[in-house]
Image (cartoon, rainbow, N blue to C red):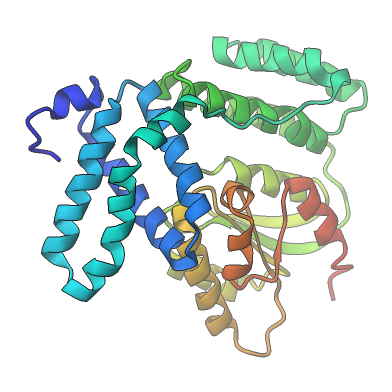
Length: 332
């Protein structure tokens, strides 16, 4: 594809680096979908891919050329038997290219509903985040906290839907990826400023560990979970994006937390979660009872994948995780 004679026109002004990202995610996603034989997941995701990247200026013809190129490469580098098992999937994508375009035209990005009593505050926060008004958002949130709203509720019921909305606007081509990233960085600043004003409980529930899996660069979910648990009395070690599995395992063995929580945003990274859980199980030993839980957007997109990683539990939100962690009782 790098040498395609029309590559610049196909990318619609986007940089060639875009293809490196799409290839990496595509390969990991397709491996996961094929492993689970999940046709519906492929169809939903392709509609999202076509719609989102087309809204960034990428031609629909780019995808047809991409699928045909994958067919050529698969035939060249894989043994005939393995290639023969994969090629029908890409042939289906080529043959249904027009159908996928139609599905993309009807695609609607996911948004999270907000309670009517918070709708005005929510709209203000979203608008001011996009405009870059950090002080205005902080002041509005200070008022909500003074009126009795908990910090955890602020995260779950206002900022989580706000970040989903920002992502939806990027998908629709209403925000550039640069502005989306700037908005995310601003949310960290706002929430960090509010976080240190919170009363930290004297309760000591013990140590927990929260981490995105390897190859996962989305940290917001892990961060929200970590601070929610800290404000509930937990001593949390929060590891960073793309933490190598050996680093995570070594940290768990050193700190011996009461639980490990793994975050997965992209379906293509579910395999990383599966491998990480297996590494943790092996390192901790068969008799260890440390709970390993998972959460994140990947499992909201494909709930059936949660069971496949062999974790003890899938938790759908930070507040659900806090409630679950309280059930572990006092530390020994």
